[in-house]
Image (tube, rainbow, N blue to C red; front, side, top):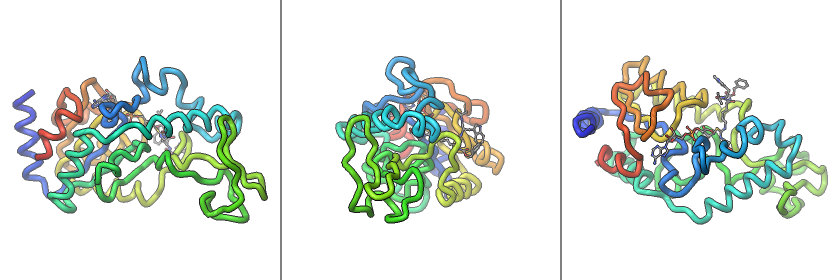
Length: 249
Ligand code: BV8
């Protein structure tokens, strides 16, 4: 693989524009469970459609709210890892050359100092209304929202509207501005790094296909096989915390 690493380093040094798509794997070495990890992954205990959907929240708000509360609590105790920091440091050394697109909602890229993160699936630490509230555009603008309690999503005291996490659930549209910027980055990059993602969830995973179709070299960084290996010009079998500092010098 050393030859592959040297080759990819060369591609990156010659790339005017780099796009990077990250998934849960880049936070694994910070101690954040991935979705598909058979032992500890979130999906090991639940299925995506059972929790990360609006229907699931309307059907059982307590269960879904508690799942996000647990994840938010776990994230209080973790730090960005060398992979997150390598990306942020590269972005600061080479302003505008690397566009970071993430599927993660954990905020660790932002905490590592990455600028302009395109967070396709939102941010787990932010809230939004489940339905529009006549009194305030966002829960944080409302002075009349009850406290979050285990098993009880906060509600507007006036209209009873429930608060939900400001993440993109399955079946929901992605934020149009972030997705458009991500698609533009994929179309204009010379190299796309696809790091720490199984490449299963769309339209995020489609960005690798888009980059490839536009003539970019696609590089997958992952210790395991992924759905995107087949569109990759190079597959680096390793972890992001070890490989990203080598690639983004
Ligand atoms: C939508 C937020 C329009 C919530 C998440 C085609 C086109 C469009 C849509 C679809 C389509 N086909 C199917 C769909 C529907 C669906 C979808 O993709 N379903 C999948 C399951 C087939 N997509 C949607 O619903 C999207 N919306 O398209 O709207 C629309 C509307 C209606 C009908 C049709 C279209 C919305 C998707 C967003 C869902 N929200 N997150 C929350 O977090 O709770 S998804 C969530 O799961 C994550 O954000 C992430 O995207 C995904 C998990 O994937 P990964 O990040 O890859 O993580 P995973 O655990 O799977 O893998 C970890 C990887 O890391 C592994 O490969 C592992 O080997 C690796 N790894 C482990 N350790 C390390 C490592 N790598 C490096 N270093 C390590 N140390």
